Length: 259
Ligand SMILES: [Zn+2]
Image 1: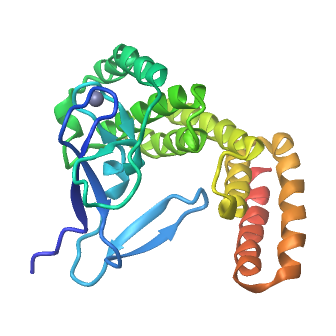
Image 2 (image 1 turned 30 degrees about the vertical axis):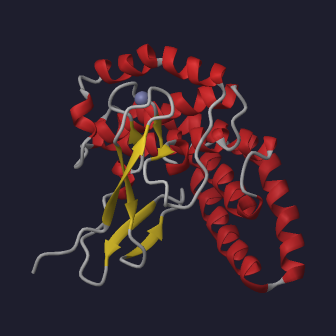
């Protein structure tokens, strides 16, 4: 039996150099069971006749010309005007900075011995790592230009470059990605550049990353913030309180393991 493809393609247009189509991949709904590890990194197992989804390596969409990269579809221009959603409108100075930084992004892939063809599906772990590094560079420039949610995207890109660095590179490099992810997520929490409803998961992740790195002292202010939030949520009860109990149990385990 042939398993169905869990991903579908969306053609987009680069908001920096206007190349089109730039192919983006999305996960079809209800075709996977998804579980998360201690760092909230998902694993996918196909259901209802679908193959296991390779969405993690394919999530960063990469412009083959200027190497602008993002994990968010709305960071590109829609080609099909009938589809709902807002197009991105970059400010002129942001677009120029992104265009000029092409050399840096090209340097990242040159150094890894890759070419743009390596970003096609299927992506190797090394190409996936590079795609997240490009996403991090793109997001860092957008963050400098105060594009909303770019700090969150930067943090996520560091976390997933860690996942693929673990598979494709030396351990010093994967540790460095994890350290960058911990600092970036802490900054996302401190600056409030995140979806308001996701604060419990964000705070959990900041703590989990710090404990994984053995940074117990640095984790303490976040543990206090987590405790305060838990008190507030517990009074309200329901699903949020249940989720925070799960996070609290995981934090206790991670604390034990980090000593
Ligand atoms: Zn481009």
